[in-house]
Image (cartoon, rainbow, N blue to C red):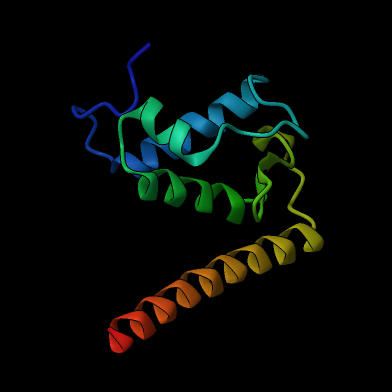
Length: 119
């Protein structure tokens, strides 16, 4: 088995990680209901930045394969080979989680700007 990322592969690293995680779910290494390892652990395992793994998980979330819950982790919703389209609920909840994460990030930026202005 070729390790991921394979720098001889012309595909972006994000796509390789997305495919690897998709294959792991399809093979049963992670079953529906299972929690995936934390982002930092996945990033360390692949030897890439956390943002690269986050982008790979975003793709799987759009496909309805996984769902991220703020402060709870990322969980497998369904196997990619099941052919079942993601439920409307899963899609909406995934989007809400994405927006909540963006709000948290923006709040942190605003807090930093306020501290800098007060200093």
